[in-house]
Image 1 (cartoon, one colour):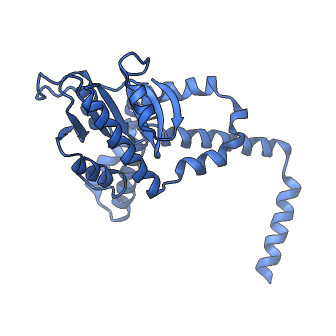
Image 2: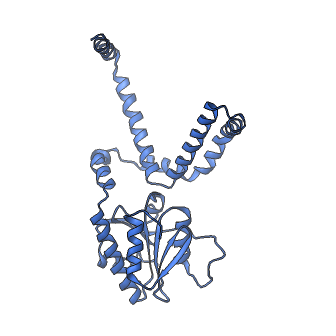
Image 3: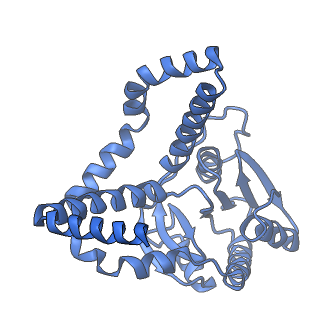
Length: 276
């Protein structure tokens, strides 16, 4: 009973000292934290943040267990890390400042609905996506129409999406084929698939710097390998010259002649989160 009474007294004291400026302060900080989390979730910087957290945990454990050498090394690392972080996150910092300049607070009214919708992952929807992609690339392959489809996984590709045109459409064989029709405005770029929907088209991907790749591989294949080196995304390529279908994952290209194996590997990637 005494604890309950103390809580009531503390709450009353807090309410009496609460000011309008405190409400504004909380609102502004909440707004900034939300946009920071959203920015990290939608870009590849999320993986860098995870790495920093691992180093912080290692530093804490080194201090707790009195690992002198490890704690000294990490302590020296943190003294100079601020300059390194500014260099590493320079593109992301510039992008977030640009977004703040373009932001429209009124768009955040449907924030909760958007987050819930985006985070939903339905196995049936993923199976439908796999079937649609398989049928689409099969048609594109038969017509020898070049295509590049990137399947976003854990690493968010917000910075890549910003280079293209937002589509946000349900998967459709017709739409995918239309996007890569050789006279369509988006056919030269990549199609980004996020959370089971066709999210953005005409996106520009980083090219691989791997000199060991075959000289016969064109820009699409090099872009597919490039994005797979910079993230955990899987990139599907249809060759314009041969009609061959390939998947780039972790910097490695795998070419398919059996569409059933292609569908099985997509299922392992998107549903089972396993290797191919």
